Image (cartoon, rainbow, N blue to C red):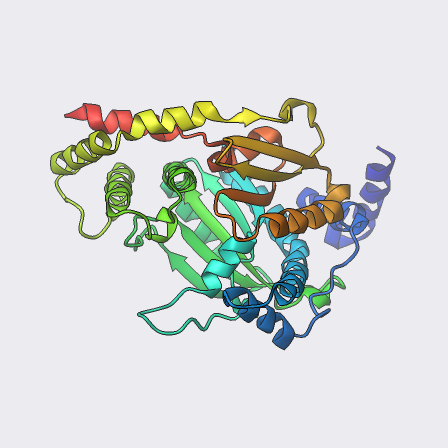
Length: 389
């Protein structure tokens, strides 16, 4: 209360702090965040950081070189934490203003995902992506109750908004869905600080906005991918699974009044029948239920009040999830533990680890159900589809 009184007085003295949201931002940036020392994105030159990416995408690199490269990658990724926090504060405030049931979260991209993206080839050409060019190392996400609210948040408060950060890319995968069925809105911004944090200027942050139905689909894709050991998310899984999720994505798009996925049936009856057939062939509902029931929890999240950072470690062999919770003041340790955990499992596809931020443990489970192997909402929607005709 004493701290709030001090800053309330300061708010009355300076026009910058005459709004509650701005005061909250000030409190966070000046009181909470400085418990973690600034991570210098220029500790290693851009050329060295890019060279680290080249080493990690080369299967023939020496182990010592890989270890050094992982250290440089971890520093580059950790430096994105501050810009990510700034964007998360704004996204949470605005999304909740227009949708009280909205959900917001943040995450730093996992090392395997970074390396995979570095190796991505376009039209058979040699991979050319540079680590310092990657646009989604820092990501914030808003899940809105419906597609109309998702579009409103994107258009009115970001695309038409008065952000001081420069928007450098925009992908509307709702109007123009990906061929694999993925639907969402991605906005890329180049961070710009006028509050003495200019060492982070020009770092990129991805703002991802999707509807609840789109979120349910995406997390089901990731959950299945974990257990069958295939990158369905990147359209690299078995054709049967890829086809199933494309069909379901089109069904969800129809429910939202949005464009469907290319090369899927336009007729609803035909589309629903195809989904029913694929579900029967792959025994999908039974598998999803078993995977959800199989997870053993090693932490009681209800006893983790005040925690806002969570290290999720998934072992698909033993079917267990280990969760380590951290307060905001423990952020430096959380990022260090994240780097250590990733180094330990590097190259092992049966394990996965990610450090995510959420305001409550309930929001954590809602924002990242794929790590809890929770596909119950997806199953509910699937039942509606296969039982309609």
